[in-house]
Image (cartoon, rainbow, N blue to C red; front, side, top):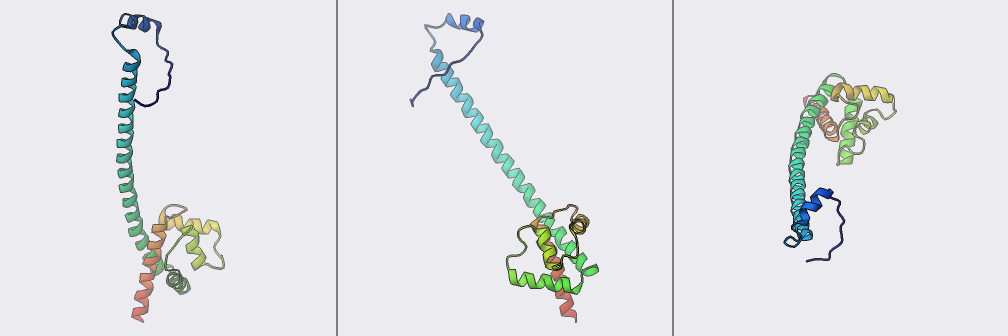
Length: 163
């Protein structure tokens, strides 16, 4: 047995009196140690099991959301490029995409606007409204913005091929 430490417990007086009848035949310290050991083991197992289940569930949820962000981001980017984007904005995205190689990083929503609006003509509220309209929230995920850029660049590629 490993090193032991002393633990003081408080129990109701009536219970101690009933236990006293068996003091000679029961090692109460050993019984308590065994009960503590079983209970701690059960708690550890439950915690581990819940953590693994929760981790798996949340990971699956995250993957579904990322997949959804990729799909909707691409569609939104294509729609923006087809209906609203200026050629200068699309060319700026293409240059950035070629130069950076790594894609959108940091704060993806702000980074997008630093590329397509380098002079800062749109204020923070206008940028927020844009993402509210195309993403449904003020701050899009990096996956959404990267897919948005990719969708917009698909339209630019199709344009370049057609001319």
